[in-house]
Image (cartoon, rainbow, N blue to C red; front, side, top):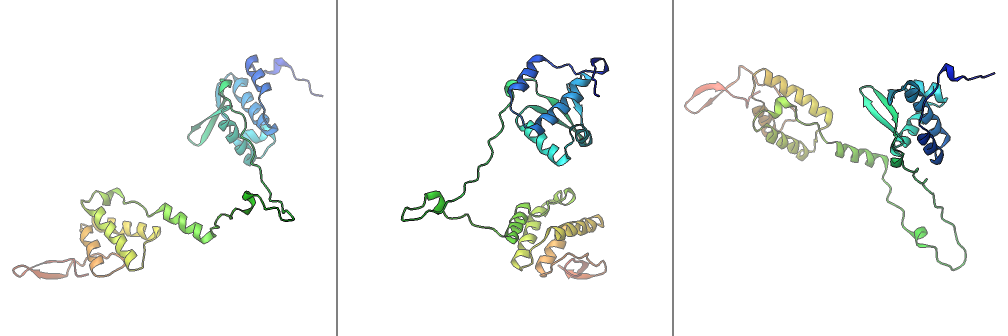
Length: 239
């Protein structure tokens, strides 16, 4: 037989706050999570406390998926506060009950009713259905939104490199071989390796465009061409 005693521990809470709770509509799940937070904060004379989902599950008997949704609702309604502290969250009660919000109205699903006779159907029933987008189109839209990876600092610091990189991206589109995110990351790594080896990365990209290549290649150190007055010098046109 349960016999709770105040001597075994109690939670001090202002009467004004309790009365505000009694006037505020909350679902049973919201009430469970709320009182769990009260127990872990006011029960230890703290305004806020770190509470794990494991603790919430043990105190409320709910699974963490439902707990997560309920916490979001209580935060949106400004009944509780939540602060991010690294890999965990701290929770507390919003004492200013004048900031609390009523729950958002539930979405109502309107079903069309087929009418008989010559009476025209209401406009909302005869309205054209929204255009459907198949899964493949959605994936393509998401890829376009994400875009390609940005230039790493090691390459963006090279004067004029961003312009020639844009030329490279456009060139790949024109030859019907557009770059993918994975290909771009690999080419960035390759170019940074060439740069660390002392090669001119702008010349390497320019050469690949002029020669119609689809990738970048490290210049040969023993290849020469003749320029100006016949002096022999290394030339990146030859790979």
